[in-house]
Image (cartoon, rainbow, N blue to C red; front, side):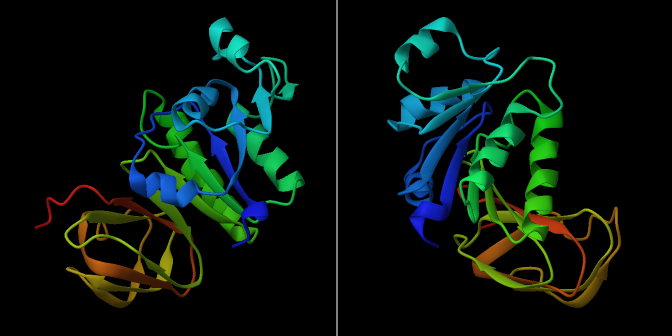
Length: 217
Protein backbone atom coordinates (compact mmCIF):
# COMPACT_ATOMS: atom_id res chain seq x y z
CA UNK A 1 0.00 0.00 0.00
CA UNK A 2 1.39 3.43 -0.95
CA UNK A 3 2.42 5.48 2.09
CA UNK A 4 0.62 8.58 0.76
CA UNK A 5 -2.71 6.72 1.15
CA UNK A 6 -1.86 5.21 4.55
CA UNK A 7 -2.94 7.30 7.52
CA UNK A 8 -2.08 6.87 11.18
CA UNK A 9 -4.84 8.20 13.45
CA UNK A 10 -3.60 8.88 16.98
CA UNK A 11 -6.39 8.23 19.48
CA UNK A 12 -6.49 8.82 23.22
CA UNK A 13 -6.36 5.19 24.40
CA UNK A 14 -3.36 3.29 25.72
CA UNK A 15 -0.45 2.80 23.34
CA UNK A 16 2.61 0.66 24.04
CA UNK A 17 5.40 1.61 21.68
CA UNK A 18 7.14 -1.47 20.29
CA UNK A 19 9.38 -2.23 17.32
CA UNK A 20 6.43 -4.03 15.70
CA UNK A 21 4.29 -0.92 16.04
CA UNK A 22 7.00 1.31 14.60
CA UNK A 23 7.28 -1.00 11.58
CA UNK A 24 3.52 -0.91 11.06
CA UNK A 25 3.28 2.89 11.09
CA UNK A 26 6.48 3.67 9.17
CA UNK A 27 5.89 6.24 6.44
CA UNK A 28 2.22 6.85 7.26
CA UNK A 29 0.67 10.29 7.18
CA UNK A 30 -0.43 11.30 10.68
CA UNK A 31 -3.58 12.91 12.08
CA UNK A 32 -4.03 13.38 15.83
CA UNK A 33 -7.45 13.22 17.47
CA UNK A 34 -7.53 15.51 20.52
CA UNK A 35 -5.52 13.93 23.39
CA UNK A 36 -4.05 11.38 21.00
CA UNK A 37 -1.41 14.03 20.34
CA UNK A 38 0.34 12.69 23.45
CA UNK A 39 1.35 9.68 21.35
CA UNK A 40 2.85 11.97 18.71
CA UNK A 41 5.23 13.23 21.36
CA UNK A 42 6.21 9.72 22.45
CA UNK A 43 6.55 8.49 18.85
CA UNK A 44 8.42 11.65 17.82
CA UNK A 45 5.97 12.31 15.00
CA UNK A 46 4.73 15.60 13.59
CA UNK A 47 1.06 15.23 12.60
CA UNK A 48 -0.20 17.14 9.58
CA UNK A 49 -3.51 17.84 11.30
CA UNK A 50 -4.97 17.96 14.83
CA UNK A 51 -8.74 17.62 15.16
CA UNK A 52 -11.26 17.50 17.98
CA UNK A 53 -12.87 19.62 20.65
CA UNK A 54 -9.56 19.70 22.57
CA UNK A 55 -11.16 18.87 25.91
CA UNK A 56 -8.55 16.11 26.38
CA UNK A 57 -5.56 18.22 25.36
CA UNK A 58 -4.03 20.07 28.33
CA UNK A 59 -2.58 23.54 27.69
CA UNK A 60 1.03 22.34 27.91
CA UNK A 61 0.34 19.83 25.13
CA UNK A 62 -1.24 22.50 22.95
CA UNK A 63 1.72 24.81 23.63
CA UNK A 64 4.09 22.07 22.47
CA UNK A 65 2.52 21.94 18.99
CA UNK A 66 1.76 25.59 18.14
CA UNK A 67 2.31 25.24 14.39
CA UNK A 68 0.27 22.07 13.75
CA UNK A 69 -2.85 22.92 11.72
CA UNK A 70 -5.91 22.45 13.92
CA UNK A 71 -9.50 21.73 13.02
CA UNK A 72 -11.58 22.47 16.13
CA UNK A 73 -15.10 21.20 16.75
CA UNK A 74 -17.60 22.06 19.48
CA UNK A 75 -17.81 19.76 22.50
CA UNK A 76 -21.48 19.08 21.69
CA UNK A 77 -20.95 17.30 18.38
CA UNK A 78 -22.41 14.21 16.74
CA UNK A 79 -19.14 12.33 16.11
CA UNK A 80 -16.25 11.31 18.35
CA UNK A 81 -12.89 12.99 17.84
CA UNK A 82 -11.60 9.70 16.45
CA UNK A 83 -14.33 9.44 13.83
CA UNK A 84 -13.77 13.07 12.86
CA UNK A 85 -10.08 12.27 12.32
CA UNK A 86 -10.99 9.25 10.20
CA UNK A 87 -13.32 11.38 8.06
CA UNK A 88 -10.47 13.86 7.50
CA UNK A 89 -8.17 11.02 6.45
CA UNK A 90 -10.75 9.68 4.00
CA UNK A 91 -11.20 13.15 2.53
CA UNK A 92 -7.43 13.23 1.94
CA UNK A 93 -7.55 9.94 0.02
CA UNK A 94 -6.87 7.34 2.71
CA UNK A 95 -7.07 3.72 1.56
CA UNK A 96 -5.44 2.26 4.66
CA UNK A 97 -6.01 3.51 8.22
CA UNK A 98 -4.15 2.59 11.39
CA UNK A 99 -6.09 3.45 14.55
CA UNK A 100 -3.44 3.69 17.28
CA UNK A 101 -4.69 3.88 20.86
CA UNK A 102 -7.95 2.26 19.73
CA UNK A 103 -8.09 -0.68 22.16
CA UNK A 104 -8.15 -1.03 25.93
CA UNK A 105 -7.95 1.90 28.33
CA UNK A 106 -10.66 3.27 30.56
CA UNK A 107 -13.37 3.69 27.92
CA UNK A 108 -14.77 0.34 26.84
CA UNK A 109 -17.44 2.15 24.83
CA UNK A 110 -14.79 3.86 22.72
CA UNK A 111 -12.85 0.61 22.22
CA UNK A 112 -16.00 -1.20 21.10
CA UNK A 113 -16.93 1.64 18.76
CA UNK A 114 -13.48 1.53 17.16
CA UNK A 115 -14.01 -2.16 16.37
CA UNK A 116 -17.40 -1.45 14.82
CA UNK A 117 -16.01 1.54 12.91
CA UNK A 118 -13.18 -0.63 11.56
CA UNK A 119 -15.70 -3.18 10.26
CA UNK A 120 -17.74 -0.42 8.63
CA UNK A 121 -14.62 0.96 6.94
CA UNK A 122 -13.69 -2.54 5.77
CA UNK A 123 -17.10 -2.80 4.09
CA UNK A 124 -16.21 0.42 2.21
CA UNK A 125 -12.97 -1.11 0.92
CA UNK A 126 -10.65 0.56 3.46
CA UNK A 127 -7.92 -1.56 5.02
CA UNK A 128 -7.83 -1.00 8.79
CA UNK A 129 -5.55 -1.95 11.67
CA UNK A 130 -6.49 -1.21 15.28
CA UNK A 131 -3.69 -1.30 17.82
CA UNK A 132 -2.74 -0.59 21.40
CA UNK A 133 0.80 -1.75 20.70
CA UNK A 134 0.25 -4.90 22.75
CA UNK A 135 -3.04 -5.88 21.10
CA UNK A 136 -4.08 -5.67 17.44
CA UNK A 137 -7.34 -5.95 15.55
CA UNK A 138 -8.20 -6.45 11.87
CA UNK A 139 -11.76 -6.37 10.50
CA UNK A 140 -12.71 -9.34 8.33
CA UNK A 141 -15.06 -9.58 5.39
CA UNK A 142 -15.77 -12.13 2.71
CA UNK A 143 -12.57 -13.64 1.32
CA UNK A 144 -9.19 -14.76 2.68
CA UNK A 145 -6.43 -12.94 4.51
CA UNK A 146 -3.19 -14.08 6.13
CA UNK A 147 -1.92 -12.50 9.36
CA UNK A 148 1.71 -12.52 10.44
CA UNK A 149 1.39 -13.70 14.05
CA UNK A 150 4.20 -15.13 16.15
CA UNK A 151 3.93 -18.85 16.99
CA UNK A 152 2.18 -19.45 20.32
CA UNK A 153 0.57 -16.00 20.36
CA UNK A 154 -3.11 -15.74 21.22
CA UNK A 155 -5.90 -14.53 18.96
CA UNK A 156 -9.68 -14.57 18.82
CA UNK A 157 -12.27 -13.95 16.13
CA UNK A 158 -15.22 -11.80 17.23
CA UNK A 159 -18.28 -11.99 15.01
CA UNK A 160 -20.77 -9.13 14.71
CA UNK A 161 -23.52 -11.33 13.34
CA UNK A 162 -23.75 -14.76 11.76
CA UNK A 163 -20.65 -15.77 9.79
CA UNK A 164 -20.73 -18.50 7.15
CA UNK A 165 -18.05 -20.78 5.68
CA UNK A 166 -15.34 -19.79 8.15
CA UNK A 167 -11.91 -21.39 7.68
CA UNK A 168 -9.01 -20.92 10.12
CA UNK A 169 -5.61 -22.29 9.05
CA UNK A 170 -2.22 -22.08 10.75
CA UNK A 171 -3.71 -22.28 14.24
CA UNK A 172 -3.94 -24.87 16.99
CA UNK A 173 -7.72 -25.02 16.67
CA UNK A 174 -8.55 -25.11 12.98
CA UNK A 175 -11.94 -24.74 11.38
CA UNK A 176 -13.15 -25.58 7.91
CA UNK A 177 -16.34 -24.32 6.26
CA UNK A 178 -17.81 -23.55 9.69
CA UNK A 179 -20.96 -21.48 10.21
CA UNK A 180 -20.39 -19.34 13.29
CA UNK A 181 -23.56 -18.14 14.96
CA UNK A 182 -23.81 -14.66 16.44
CA UNK A 183 -22.98 -14.84 20.14
CA UNK A 184 -20.96 -18.06 19.92
CA UNK A 185 -17.65 -18.24 21.83
CA UNK A 186 -16.28 -21.00 19.57
CA UNK A 187 -13.55 -18.75 18.13
CA UNK A 188 -12.28 -17.20 21.37
CA UNK A 189 -8.69 -17.90 22.58
CA UNK A 190 -7.03 -19.67 19.68
CA UNK A 191 -3.25 -20.09 19.34
CA UNK A 192 -1.22 -19.18 16.26
CA UNK A 193 1.25 -21.75 14.95
CA UNK A 194 2.76 -19.14 12.63
CA UNK A 195 1.00 -17.05 9.99
CA UNK A 196 -2.77 -17.49 10.34
CA UNK A 197 -5.08 -17.51 7.32
CA UNK A 198 -8.75 -16.70 7.86
CA UNK A 199 -11.42 -17.13 5.18
CA UNK A 200 -15.03 -15.99 5.41
CA UNK A 201 -17.79 -16.89 3.00
CA UNK A 202 -19.98 -14.09 4.31
CA UNK A 203 -20.51 -12.01 7.42
CA UNK A 204 -18.65 -9.45 9.50
CA UNK A 205 -16.00 -10.28 12.07
CA UNK A 206 -12.79 -8.99 13.60
CA UNK A 207 -9.58 -10.83 14.40
CA UNK A 208 -8.19 -9.65 17.76
CA UNK A 209 -4.60 -10.72 18.43
CA UNK A 210 -2.07 -10.47 21.24
CA UNK A 211 1.25 -10.87 19.37
CA UNK A 212 3.39 -10.60 22.51
CA UNK A 213 1.27 -12.95 24.63
CA UNK A 214 2.94 -16.32 24.10
CA UNK A 215 1.00 -18.11 26.82
CA UNK A 216 -0.18 -20.61 24.20
CA UNK A 217 3.20 -22.37 24.33
